Length: 277
Image 1 (cartoon, one colour):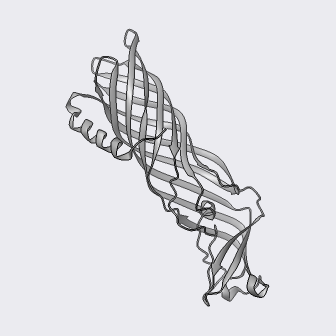
Image 2 (tube, helix red, strand yellow; image 1 turned 60 degrees about the vertical axis):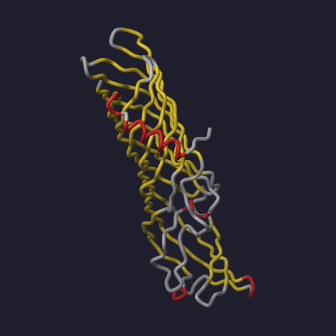
Image 3 (cartoon, helix red, strand yellow; image 1 turned 90 degrees about the vertical axis):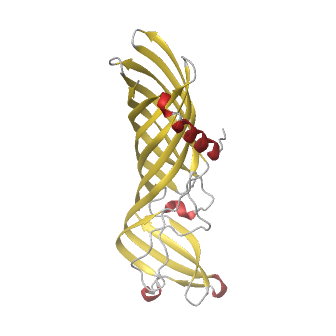
């Protein structure tokens, strides 16, 4: 399923100009928010997500409407190495411009991730009255998903960074003043570089009249991202190389180990809203 981002934003702007004839709504979304990855070295756990949303639906007929708005969403999860004591290798260059294989081994590495994003939805709604004061609703469409920040915090019992210089067949594992050696109780914070993508969205639910001008909305939702929210040009070690010390190593994050990895948000759960007629 492909959507043009300019079409989503352009149509949303047009509908904003027609807002005087629209039904406004506010709401909250909660459930499982998963930042899916196709990397082979990670395991994801404890996935939570939610959003605050506001917008309106412009009625075309008694049953069909077009909706848009703005949403602020949050995803939280923890990520682990699938081998808690495994070694990952990336290639680095030392201060003398010599290339080497940088091998990083950690013990009990854990990464806490928090993603905040702004979403601009554009959807079609079908509604049908099924009882007095009760309407069935189905919404389907797309969202432009724009990450605001994607922060990570990592801890490990220990980090060992070693070098292998292929040209001279040399291993270095204990030269702290040049960044090679071990460190205990590692803790650091970092941030992934991101870009916007498109998500599909579906909602299935009901509205219940709560008076002449207001209605309660409750629904199940499913959202799926396309493409990758990560924006990086090169592979990087998840814990970076510091050429002058074995401490203060930069946290790049596990997803940085593969520049081609597809990192995309997927969410499902329940939505509660309040409609103003």
